[in-house]
Amino acid sequence: PVQRFVEVIRTDLTSDATVDFVTSLAASLGKHAAVIGDDPGFIVNRLLLVYINHALWLLDLGHATAEQLDVAMREHAGYPMGPVELADLIGLDTCLEVIRTIHAATGREVDRPAASLVDHVAYGRLGRKSGMGYYDHSAGPLTLVSTDAARETQLCEDLLVAYLGDAIDMNHSGYASREDIDA
Image (cartoon, rainbow, N blue to C red; front, side, top):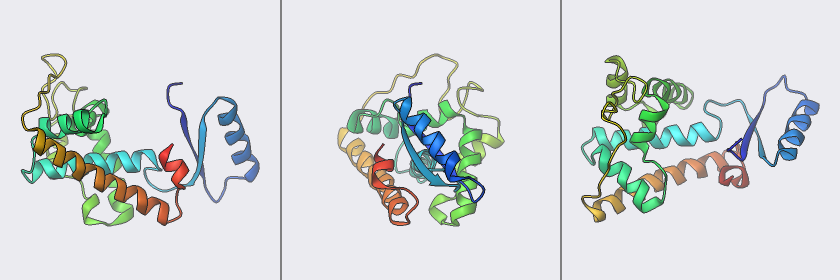
């Protein structure tokens, strides 16, 4: 009920009548219906999980801490959550499964799951659902504090450029329209 966006997945077996019915239903509910193909992650999860994985790569490479990445996107991009805390909320096992699926489909090195994500899942640190992920959730809500505004601005720009590049690739491949990606 909260999300205004609906992805309608068309396969070789999906009739035009079915697509028309679902898109009409979505419109009657005040939703934007994006009709797309059956590719791993679709639009939302493809963009979201590649963005999260990119942030985790920056973490793994020592370019930033989890807190810096999360503060960067909260404070400088206006996101309600940063990528690392969002991964913990979604569940690291779920993130890993989607990222592995995307990587298997693309074969791109940049889509390979971040090593820390693989390790966290292997050790049962699944995020909020297990109480421990990149953050310790046993102590209650996270308190994230800005420590280096210039560094956080740069991290925000790095993450947004990568995210935008993925959106442009998705559009140029013909998979999704700019309107659907923006929605």
